[in-house]
Length: 82
Image (cartoon, rainbow, N blue to C red; front, side, top):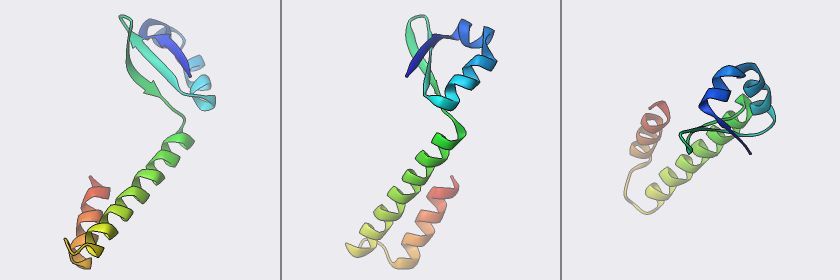
């Protein structure tokens, strides 16, 4: 993981994008981390994990009797579209 200042990120944006394709880049402002830049592929991978998590949670709610199947599906679709 690479750490760079906001000023450096602004000045060398093209290099920042190239680096983010290989590894996470933490942007720091006044000595504290304020953002992380990741590749599109990493974003898609993390999004898939998040979607799988919500599918599991919806199924758990259904299995435990908290929601009907239809309610779970509606909730899951609502959460995934938000």
